Length: 509
Image (cartoon, rainbow, N blue to C red; front, side):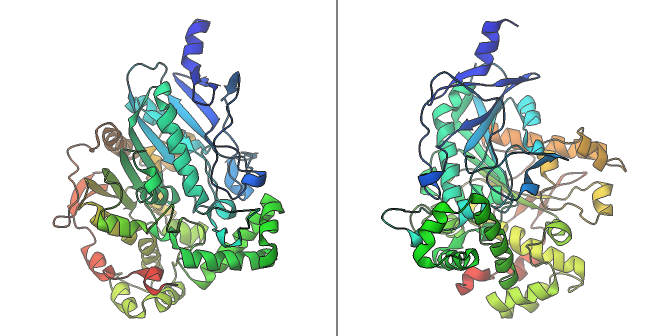
């Protein structure tokens, strides 16, 4: 390879300056590209601002810092952690060499309850999708936790204003960067698919209701969205005031404290505060987008229902047993009968008997775990599916596949497990270990099926022909498993039992 060829493959001109990437076998990666100015100093808790252009070439060979979070969530492998800091507004691009043609673009938003996660996580690399689908793959970092998802606007002063929906604004800024620059990397700015998992899927469904995101993506994939992570302005204001008490700062000194306290101290107070909220109101989480009447004018469900959400094709679904990961390892969901009873008492006491009767064996542990997963992920995702299909092509799935080891662990097809297929881990160390007791061929097969659908959707706006559109008559749902099949209205009894349940939003808490 000549030096001129290497330069053509790795150096790209963006609107802010030249960036030099790095070869990864047959691909080129550009990592840690800033899409907004570092949100530090006077820009802490402010909307993202433009990047100052640079001269020369920016070395884009390494991932940027993760957002501020608990260090344990930044582990890359035992003993190695990704640095984290407030200077975290960067993205990464991965593509095949050469710029001929306009390739479909897939922009991935990581999950983590809006409190943890990073684009540097190994599973999110995207190499398999790029090689198989000849796409341009983008992954992003955005602000998390206290610094990204608490709304401190009530404490603004003329000298020190604060903005709402910072993490959501970051995501829009990243998509604007893609719109401006992705053609230089071989991507088609008019053919962008935004996709994410968990909080990242909530970001996707929220972006669909965000006016500023209009025209920035042509299709959407939401894997286990949790629409309840979006909160009302009144609730967000109360949480911010309660957080300041947790921090030990008087309201009169809130602006000063938020501006001068170390980021780590603000984050640790946020972790404590999240545990408090989860205990007081099971199923609620204080970090998430806020219906502020401005940047996010209304709840995503309302926007989907009335047809004001962006009318782009959407794939949306959940996993068979979302709740098992939380009951065993993570917490944060109402997955035991005491939490569930408290949740219903605070939201809709009359619904408890009707809904719990749809879970055979309740209050047995497995039934309670499934109810907690359903109320957080499946039920609200189904609400969005039913609404959006009236205005745009919508495709519903459920991911049921689990190899023998996942069943032995009591996890089965738990929250996040579909990503093992989306990102193809079958032949990685973790994939081989997980399928050592059996199921490697089945994992390869379900990976092949998922990726073919995802990539066809990204290229054309429809999955493969074997996956019918969802409508409220048939309710066709693709069930990914060892053998993937279409089921009409799966979990019909559960769906009917949950009808009319509005959760905490129904009580205005």
